[in-house]
Image 1 (tube, rainbow, N blue to C red):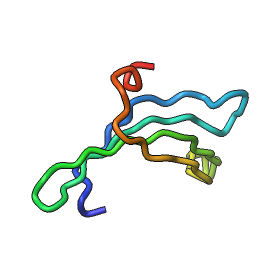
Image 2 (cartoon, helix red, strand yellow; image 1 turned 60 degrees about the vertical axis):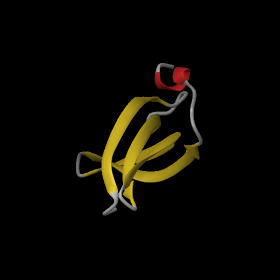
Image 3 (cartoon, one colour; image 1 turned 45 degrees about the vertical axis):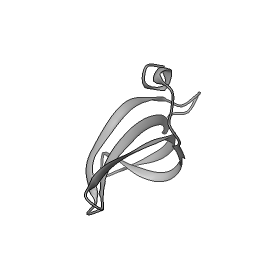
Length: 74
């Protein structure tokens, strides 16, 4: 992940009626050939508790191309 400059979490919320899955939205800023590139993602992360700490078990994350303004505020 040497090209990732920043990760910004847009939102997290409990996914439907689950106790171990969240719906997340986040963006990354990547440094590519001397320029910053912005990428946007959303999806679910299923977690498990290990030694009292939540850890990621499975994810289903997709990249979005140019989300509209409302995506950042929903």
